Image: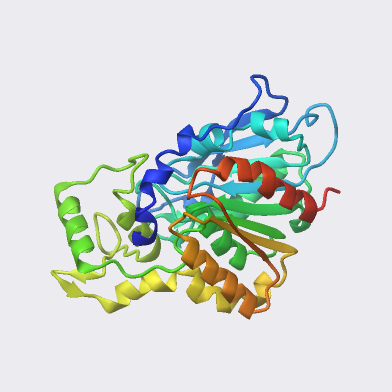
Length: 336
């Protein structure tokens, strides 16, 4: 995961990026578990019962109103809890902003290798369907939602921005607006021999799984998501070098999972969205690839907005969520 490995120092500070919020919040934050048939039987052995945070706005309990839903996907190396408590500061930050139009849903995608890449493989399970089918179906059946694509938005940060774009391109029948913040992994180059060899040595000695706040297993996370091999225990994935010899087909799988490569295949799907927004900080190591994606969408005639703001990969995510992301969905989602 070389394109985001450099950002570890920013992400490790996320839990300290606190917004000023009141002591007492008016909305309700629930932590629930949602079972996912799409994740059953994954070779990682990760549980198919996933933690999900649900924010219910002020007035939800005392009315019969149905609400739009905004789904937010967190970044690599941490779980949803870090974003809920340390980055977005739910529920207080949303109450302070005076935004009461949405139900917010934040699923936890922390897995054996510290992140699912929101992808689909037999090794990690089908995270695309978990988000777009299992989770959406559960939320619609257990909460008073407006169960229609026109009232659903998908958003996320870093790995979650990647997931927003990946799932959004494939599932326009589920969501109608996308907001991708500082998306990682837009152009995935095959990891080089030195990096693969160092990870093979770690794996031979036995690596620490479920390691929060670390990018140590980022290569394994990508391999499990993008180069699965059910016939290659105990890790059930392939790496692009074996005994020092390059495996071109395996290496190509990194590139094949790059939105900058496959975006051209999803023009009709992207054209169905009411609105698409991208942003990135001007001190973010991902500015170049996000700018390339902006150029690709422009070339393909896809209506969207793109902003480069003053900031790095993590220091303004919480405030921009309140100031930019939620108003974006206020404008573009149906509320009835």
